[in-house]
Amino acid sequence: MVKRSALVIIGVSVGVAVGVVVASLVFFAIRWFRKHANLQQQANERSLSTVPIRTDDRGTSFDSRASFSDSVTIKVIDHPAKTSQHLWWSHHSKDKIAPTSGIPRYPYKDIQKATQNFTTILGQGAFGPVYKAKMPSGEMVAVKVLASDSKQGEKEFQTEVSLLGRLHHRNLVNLVGYSVDKGAHMLIYEFMSNGSLATFLYDVEKRTLNWEERLQIALDISHGLEYLHDGAVPAVIHRDLKSANILLDHLYRAKVADFGLSKEVKFGRSNSGLKGTYGYIDPTYISTNKFTAKSDIYSFGIILFELITAIHPHQNLMEYINLAAMSSDGIDEILDKRLVGTCNLEEVHSLARIAHRCLHNTPRKRPSIGEVMQAISKIKQRHMGKKNVLSLTEDDFSSVVSRIESQHVEMGRLTSIAERA
Image 1 (cartoon, helix red, strand yellow):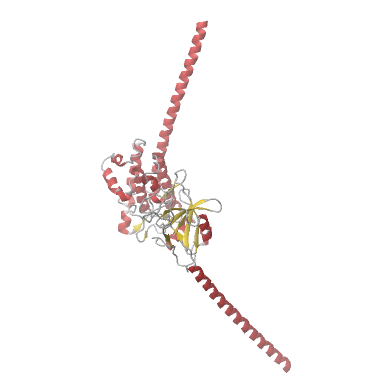
Image 2 (cartoon, one colour; image 1 turned 180 degrees about the vertical axis):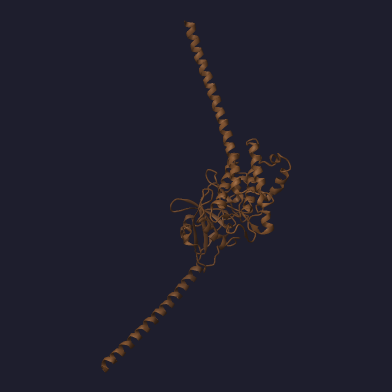
């Protein structure tokens, strides 16, 4: 019995010793692994690559497919890049975009290859440079890269991805992917081949948008905005609606873009620091620091007057609008000269009246986006009706002429028969 007890004691002691040794080995292995991972991360951070931004002699570069904020310059310079700009981000921050957003995430190397090492620049916006890219599937896209000196940052980036992960409408620009890799934060959008509305209104080298196209663009914007205000749950206020953020596809159909400053409406209205672009911001928002859906309506009213006049808000558009309002036909004096003689003035006056209502000093007296959309739709229907009537009249005239000619031929034939008889 004594011998058996001694063996049990020895066995337990050996087991405890082996357990201690194994636990020690696991502990030191974990410490070694963590230290090695930290060293690897630091090495990766030191080797972060930069994304070149090609510029012109003034340090800026733009193209019609890029959305921009404070100026309208359209030339793309093809000479090699003179400067490069480092991207920034907290390298220790994790990707905070919820995987349930449904937006695919791409590795840096895929975007680098798709943009030919970031050489296919389209333009420069408030967010950063915009590049044209061809994805492995063959799809053409536009890639916006967050720049080091961008006025926007992590919050705007996350807002854009999370919102566009659930917002889908034919008149909203579609976000097809994003990338958070190697210190670079990038947004990948469907490619809008005709660029921004602003370029067509203010670039003299662009072809003129005719009145029918401008009516359709106004209607497209209203559809997109109506979806944000009345269709999305919770509703969304854009907060940076402007002609530079309205993009046109190959058919010149309009889509609303750039949701970095957008807000979900949870309690009807919200307080925040002043956001938006000078010339488009609701004066009531400036004075009260409270934004509502009616703040977007004000911005849309400005865009409607841009479509009518081709006068930029930075060029004292509101002063021209106020002067034109002093007479019933004052809008004729500030109508875009390229439209004179080619559009129906009654339709112009109708659209101007809608725009005036959108700019009312009292937000509650401004129409809802649904009312605006219906009013523009009626103008478009009348326009198409007149166009169809005009076309029908021309067809009818041709038909009448053809019947008269046939009758003359028949009468001649009958006369000839009578003479022979």
